[in-house]
Image 1 (cartoon, rainbow, N blue to C red):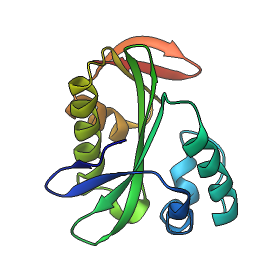
Image 2 (cartoon, rainbow, N blue to C red):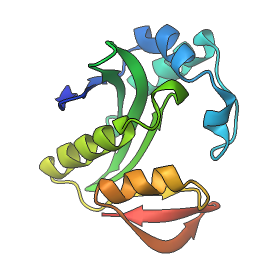
Image 3 (cartoon, rainbow, N blue to C red):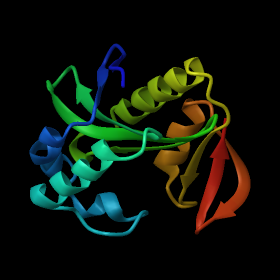
Image 4 (cartoon, rainbow, N blue to C red):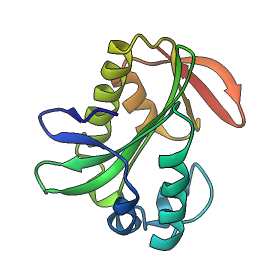
Length: 155
């Protein structure tokens, strides 16, 4: 997988070694308000990252590096099947509201389009206005169709 760079963020391919820092980035229980679950420990995250890194070639995962603060701030992912990519993003609470999710999601979508992907899909909880704004900025539009309690967005 490639490194994807923008002015403010660098999307670096996920490595198991990111688990310790990412456990702190993702430690706020509020991050799970729309997706369920609870923050994982560094050890649990390491085990998850081992599965993700070893997973099928269609599993694409990057950590989001903040150039300004020189630290990890979240992640983006794409699950690719054929020419369709389902994407997601999470930015840690301390870095929210700064446009990092938008910049990371736009960079991911741009990269996927460059790889010949289409459609690009995200599933967003109907109450998650911030994620809807990120999806809109990244060129996705609500389809109005529901999937497991979330709305399907598509480019």
